[in-house]
Image (cartoon, rainbow, N blue to C red; front, side, top):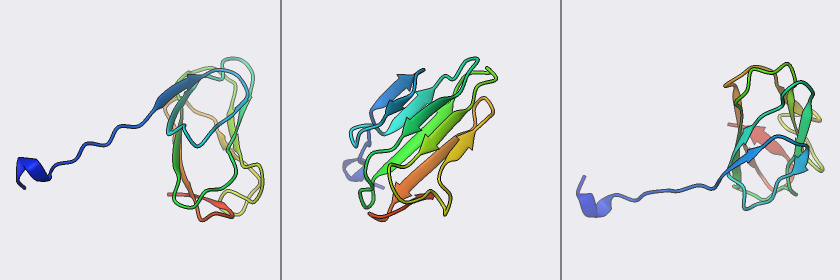
Length: 99
């Protein structure tokens, strides 16, 4: 591989600790739930958009990832319960899928 063929990809990293709605400008979300659950609502499905949500704290609260419509792998929401677990999600324009 020639060095001129290399491309670098940079993604926006956002740290969140409260219930919020993500935007298509978000790419990587580092979530801290603490002692209670937080819900991160995905934006409307956009074909090919990728989100990575990671729980970074050891608190007992869950990070719940929820679409505004459709499903994630056929269910209404996905829960991240353990520190350092993550979900990488994309959409076909109608539903979301874990990849």
